[in-house]
Length: 78
Image (cartoon, rainbow, N blue to C red; front, side):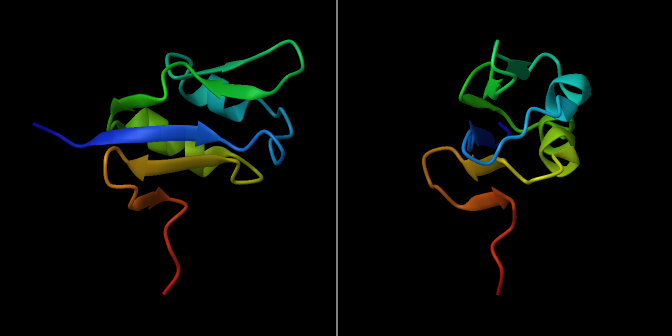
């Protein structure tokens, strides 16, 4: 069984570029204010979700391991 991720978007940082929704449309959507939301806050670890986080120009997407909270993206420094 693979990892599960908790996906969150910091809407105070999100600028509504739509890169996440374009990169992983099954996992992200923009609301009427052009703020990103994960389609489901917990998901299987997948390349499209990670690619969406990496494509965000302001790193507003936060991915952690579900149940453990260890950072997946952005990676912890150190």
